[in-house]
Image (cartoon, rainbow, N blue to C red; front, side, top):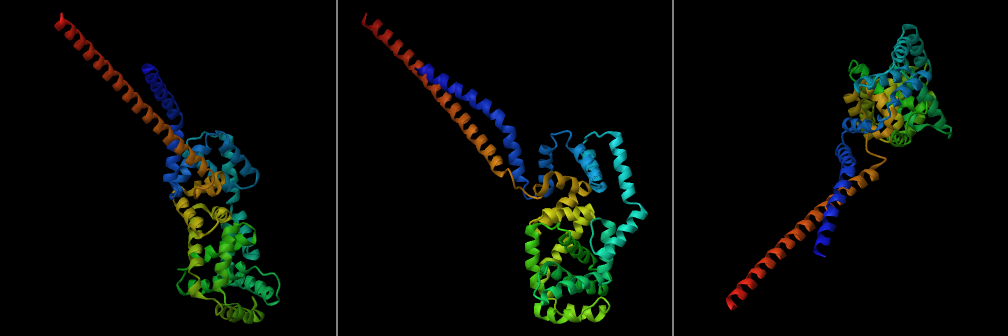
Length: 371
């Protein structure tokens, strides 16, 4: 029975050691991910280690981006592949290079600039330049305020987010002129948020937050009085009337959002900023995206394409990661318990053996004395 107990403890050590060897790599990975959950750059690197175990993933995404006419995204995946030492076919690299050259050609740039200036919608650097130019000349913002303001005055459906952003934009534009461009980054960021809203690329969570913030910065009764007199043909008096409805003291959160969006755009391009606005659920997500973009640069679009919001924070799979850690701790506890039990039982066996030897020697000594 004694040796059976020792064998059972030794079996426990062997079994727990085997299980721990299987669980430990997953637990180590889970621990690293949990430790990096507040650092988007480190978290994205760990998440990429898991996602890029499929060797074809990057190449397939490049092909898809080229098919969709998004040369910028394809180039971002090329940068990611280069950073990760992932080999790509030479003909694919040539196709990406040609697509990027075509997209950034002077003719295409001028065409998209004009589109952004006239329509007020942007999805790349050229069209954003046109959109920002329109907003800096107050035409775009006046157009948006007058249109949405009249909807509001008539009791019709009103996009209060676009209304608030355009009103804030007019005030920031005035500051930009006074500061000789000092507020231009905020101006560009607010324009990007407004354009993302127009083309349906603003995440629901961020749209809800921005909508509440935009309501706070607009004095609705004063704006309703100013709008009927507003016109893009009278920009001076229209801006003055609308700017009076802007509550600067309530605009801090929107201004910070505009700055963060601009910082993302500076590192990843306009489309990268649009991707961020699409997956963000609030201003904290955009702030995280800023940190990610500053660390990853041109690779950021590819990373967000692969990981989605998971590039910014730990979301899905947290329960599975926790289970790996719990499993590793439980297995380690079992191993230590088995080692403890084995040590105790071997010690007990040794002590029993020594006691038996002492008893035998005493019995022999007693028998010899009696004889």
